[in-house]
Length: 459
Image 1 (cartoon, rainbow, N blue to C red):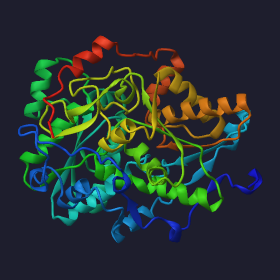
Image 2: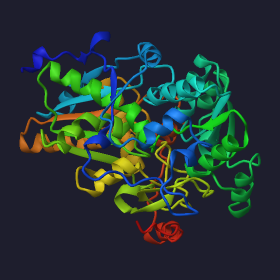
Image 3: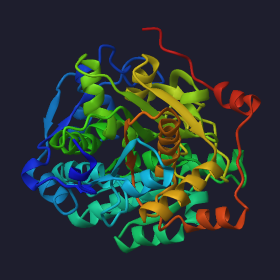
Image 4: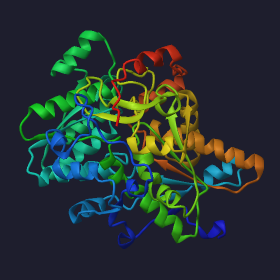
């Protein structure tokens, strides 16, 4: 189909919106390894997980077989406040790059929370409310997840306690204030409010924190406070399930115009955005129906895919959560505070880790200054100030488009624009002032975290 017939923005009607989430695990030949009890080294059961998670979310977490999960009407109604989100043809970017490539991005920043995180936040808050709980606890890195969850909890009348990675709490005060505006309590992590927080501070005085630290605190509070459960914005199977709405909408929009992507690119921290974007395309690949080149892009300062180990590890620094088999840098790894984006988790989604391990996708890392160079180039051509996380995908999309310019190939490139960067201006200021630096951990630094991996299950 000619370029002239493809609009700048492809929107779906409400009737075309997905009515089911897609569970990619149903089509995986090798299922992701189960969560494991760190004490017994045996797979966790629903009963084991009940003190931590909501009942319905536990069922979704453990379900490896149901391909399509109906989206409740109440959640569909909430989705219609900001979905469907547009699939944008980046004509201006293509022209500036002088590339024959056709570039598309799925824009998830057109809601008050500013990112894709709301897709799972409203689902998890809904199931907590349905269970009759008083509130939920969570962690947040750059703040997108905490913002989305506080918005969802305000809508449903739930209490929301957020533990925010200390470096982000200090760098992003406006994101913090949005959460408080929605009624959430926001605590810099690690804190003196919890036993695990006090322990981490005693062992690492002055630490700037990590998602692993914040997870530990949020889980401790959830399991010790009646009427509360813990919810997570990435990594877990249930989160990738909810985020599949991104990829499903993307595929429906592309199919409307007969567009078949050659390359699909997503930023990767814990896996929520990447897993959601690629899910239906990965399903086709797993079923042998079509092939795609799928690229995960992670920060060079927190390179779990490209330099981590595929092993069972704790999801939290305090080592109180179940073990997950994933690509990990070790639960004790704390990324350099110079990294301005939210891709700071030491591990990666078990689903994505298994798919990567089995060769269904590739991964690359990007240095921070190069990421912000791509972010500003994109902002000046497409008019959207992207989130630092999204800008990792933008950088590699630009790299691939430049390769097309060299070879003359008109490939279709699709990437996920997870959200906007209007609360990330401290990082943009650092880049514009020339004070932003790149930190790539040495092999010795990574070895310290990996040396703390727990005993591995033998099943």
